[in-house]
Length: 323
Image (cartoon, rainbow, N blue to C red; front, side, top):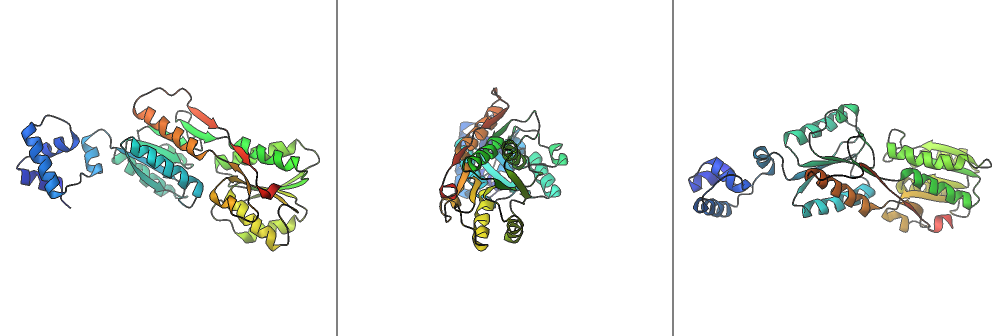
């Protein structure tokens, strides 16, 4: 692949002149500009966005940082955001950090070095990471990182409460909550919303079991179910957990919804195809994607933001697992 130096050599101009043509910055005569553009076309030169960013104050690249790509809910959000970002004339750079603080810091350093145009963060971060954020427009999705950083979130507390109210209305008296990791803010909010609503019912007994969203096993679910054989209602903090709980209930001879009512969270595609289909708390994927992208480009364009932290309502989608 050709580079800027080869273009400059063939056009018999300086590298700085090629750079001005590529970046449309600075004076170049019309004759020279046409000459350079013809050579670029002839050599099939594709400007390197990172190299161009060194010439400009920032690149036309938006970074998206998240925990993992093994999550259908975030995959759909990222797909939507990538399309919206592209319409603004920007490219997208996606990275996953898992639970590795060094990896988190490496990506933040890369974002700072390459002068990205903006950053959307879809994962909780370490204090070190928060203290080393690049000096670019940033939007947090599904969490609050700093009071000064705009955030877009769904109402996780409301979601937990809706699940509790549904189980209460169905007459469940011994409920179980499979919580997400307590260190994840949105998982804790779901748990709190559910627990607060259940606690107001004096005749309902509640049990809780914390699970990792990505590393839980069916064995630990089955063990917990066996130690609580009288459970008649379950709320799972994600649809992935709920689908596994459904299979585990079947394996120990429990029927859904006859013996146990079951509700998940997220409304990913699997909920429509389980047997029975899962009731779930639906997050507004398109609205989350659109609002996060719009807020980021308002920051990039120095436009005012009326509400720094925005929360979007969720809703219960009832299917056969609670009927």
